[in-house]
Amino acid sequence: MDRAQLADFLRTRREALQPEDVGLPRGSRRRTGGLRREEVAVLADMSADYYGRIEQQRGPKPSEQMLASLARGLRLSTAERDHLFRLGGYVAPGRLRRGDHVEAGLMRILDRLVDVPAMVVGSTGETLVQTPPCVALLGDETAYEGLARCVAHRWWTLPEARLRYPAEDQDGVGRAFTAELRAAVTRDGAGSLAAEVVADLEARSPEFRAVWAEHEVARPHSKHKRIVHPDVGVVEVFCQTLYDVDQDQGLLLFTATPGTESSERLKLLGVIGAQSL
Image 1 (cartoon, rainbow, N blue to C red):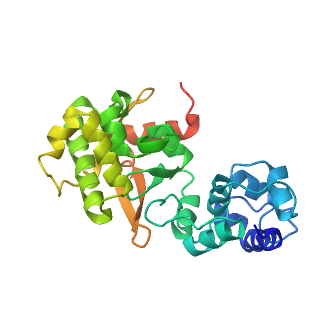
Image 2: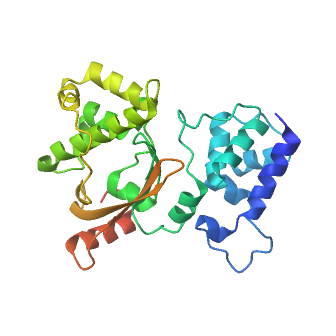
């Protein structure tokens, strides 16, 4: 671990970011350029004291998880993320096996979508980050661990994963998730996360094995979705996806037709957030 270089790198990245870059208000009393230490701490989900000690070359060696949080909070590019890990005394994460770093460009877009249900998903269907309205609409999909981070794995192993869709839509949704998983296995090959998910599902779910055996490879998700929310009922939305080709990540945005009941329900969810009515 190179404490001096790590501290200097974090400071320069912090000072290079402006509040507007991360969706924060500038305010009239801000005197310094860039972000404050406490703002970076909030973005990285850590205490301001802990972050401050890193910049001051004090405290314990940050864990890989802490460095990953800092990379996301500071909106680092993949190359900058790798550099951060090396300064922290770790081998840079593998691009294929560990695609949990959201590229800076997608994060900058997401920062400006504070009022829109939106999320970034990884190449194997892992939800990497969600806006608060998206958490209110779909629940916190970033809280899962292990293979359950993959949406296809949850679909075939957790009954509650299907509750957000009407019963009549569930067959098509499950088949679309499975087709995406097959494409990921073909692209990433043996030893990939996608292959690990398939092996586990084949061992655990006869229902998955039956669908997997049909070899569907071109079943795209419908852009029109019906989401069942436990408090406000069925919300009809359109899902648009922006892809980052280099990272193989997708930014999903959920919108409703203005003036419709679904539009009003989305606005209500934006007010109440993830709290239950």
